[in-house]
Each structure stands twice: as C-alpha cells, then as structure tokens.
Length: 476
Image (cartoon, rainbow, N blue to C red; front, side, top):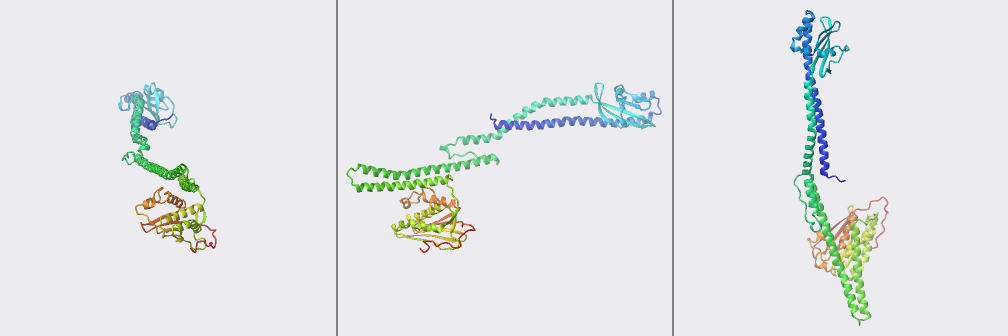
C-alpha cells in the first residue's frame, strides 16, 4: 500500500508535535505539583519556628491545661493541624486530625517533611525533634493539601481533555502545511507530465523561492534541454542518414531498371551498369559501416586496451594507401616522420583506430584540394606532446563553419557538398581523438587551405626500445 508523502509528513508532524506536547504537559503537571508542595513546605517551616518559640517560652511556666488553652487561641500556629509530644510524659497538645500521626514513633532522625493521609484528607506533615527547657519534644505540623490536590486534579483532567483537541488541531495544521510545502512539487510534476515528444521545447516554471524546489525546477529544465538536444540530434541524424542512403539506392534502382528495359543492350553496357551498381553498393557499405561505428561509440560499446603505438608508422601506412588518390588528382603528397630515438613518437592507443584517424584526415585533405595543390602530413614531438598535423592547400573552411565541422553529416558549402563524402569522417575522427584523451584543433580560411592538428599525450612506460626503427617514409 502506497502512502502519499503528504500523509506521511502529516503523521510525522503529528507524532513529533504530540510527543512534544505530552512532554510539555508532563513537565508542567509535575512542575505544578512540586511548586505547590514547595510553597507548603516553606509555610510549614515558618510555622515550625513560631511553634518552637511558643513552646520554649510557655511550656515550663504554664500548666498543661493553660498551655493547651493558650496555643488553641493562637490562630497563626494553626492548632487544628498541630501536635506537641513530650517524649517522656506524653502528648502536650494534640489536634484530633494528627492524633494517629503524632502517636506514631519516629526514628531519631526522621524525614522532616512527607505527604501523608490524615483520615480522608491528604496532608503535608513536618516532624521535628527539639530540646526545649531541658525536655525533648516531638513537634508535628501539618498542612491540608485537599484544595491544592483538587486544583492539580482539575489541571490533569484539563490536559487529558485537551489532548485529542491538540492532536486533531496538529493533524489539520500538519496536513495544511505539508500541502503548502508540496504544492510546488505537484505543479512541477503536472508540468513535467504534460511535456511530450511534440512539446520538448516547453519548460517548467521556476519558482523564485531560493530553496530546493527552485533547484529542482532548474535541474528539470536543464534535463529537458539535454533531452531536446539529443532528440533533435537523433531526428536530424535519422533524416540525414535516410537522405544519404536514398541517393545511392535510387541510383542502383535507376541503373538496374534502365539495364533491364534495354533488351538490345550489349554485354559491355550490362558490365558498365553492374560497375555503377557495385560502386553505389560500396558507397552504401562505407556509409553503413560509419553509421554503425558512430552508434557503437555513442553507446560506449567500443572498448580497447591502450597499447604502445608508433604514430609515425601509422601515418606512413596511411600515406601509402592514399597515395594513388593523390596521383589521380595530380596532388603533391608529402609525409614527413622524423627518426627519433627512444620511441619519441609513441602514444598509448589502438592501432586500428589511429590508422583510421590518419586515413580520414588525409582523405579529407585530398578530397577538398584542387588539382595541382599539395597535402603535407607530419608527426613530430612538441614539448611533451606528440603532434599529428595534416595541412592542405584546398578550398578552406569559413570561420562560421568551423564550430560545426565535426557534426555528423555536416558539409560546409557547395564545394564540399559536391564532394563524394557522407559527412561522417570528421565526426569519427573527433571520437577517435577524444577516446585517446587527445585534442584536435583546426586553422583554416577560405581559399587558403586547412590545417588539422592532433596533440596526443606521450606513451609513458619504463619499457621502451633504446633505438626506434626508422620509418619507411622518413625520407619523404
């Protein structure tokens, strides 16, 4: 059974409030009782002084009958609650109410004050022994507590009567207070519940309260912003991927339909049609591989164990693979890797990913460099970093496009849009760079070419070769 937070808060509030009230009432009750007994005790002690003085002055010179007559007329001593006992000869004065109490033998050092029962009345009794006029007397003084205890009894019943009223009042107040406290949470819940796929741009209202509710609203809005950005990115990614896949599929279909409709075509025309279909299929395969690679990167499925990799060797291998592309466009491709001792160009990473990074940067430079231009790739040591740089003399990138160059399917202008790429290469390159704790930086301007620089942290290990093997492209 689920209990609402409001009900739980009310129960806790009532429990704490009632416990506090019970403690306060208990302290008040016993405090009142103790205070009244203290006042009575002080009155008894004051009377004891008067009785002692009276006995000391008159007990020796007056006859017992005269003594009893004198003390009976002394109203301040309250003779109706007074007993004087000569421990050798017996009672000297004894009120009927204290006859039983006064006749009770006490120890030499009795408790001075106690509460006792005199018939049906509760009394506060003070018993003391004094040596007066050479005789030992036991003085017994009492004070009627009936009226005091009646007040205390009425006060106790008042507390018992007020307890359910206080409980009901505290429950009502607690329920109201918890409702007021949770009202902003209910509003946030209702507002967040009304935000769906088609209303991700909406935000919850932020109360200017300066408390946790305001922080919760701000956190919800920031979360909604991230969700909206991710949703828009996924939607854009899906649309771009569909667009990229539609073009080669349409080309394959059109080529196949033309070839099938042309019943009088030669074998050579069919071969050309199959070559076009194969080319588009290969393009689709590359695109799907890139999409799959990015999807795995987003889901953190791709995990590799860093190893000692010679970045210069990977750049040389990538240069050999794209050299034919450079020759076809009549470009001058230069790959420069210095021959450093002690593994100076070693980085910690994955060999396949680092090779792909070099291929992406070289292919991108060759693709957007006009015929007759040049591409220069280099790996060198810069301070405590290993830097990979690829520079071209191509069409360049406008400053407004530089912040978006690593977005998926992004191509800056008509010149780049006319290229054969899918717009995923640099996005994959950035993921590879970030997965190797490296950084990438671009400097470019339209018509002046572009330079991509990737700075890797060096490979740190006590087991490095004394002499690095020379790279096959070191003399390029």
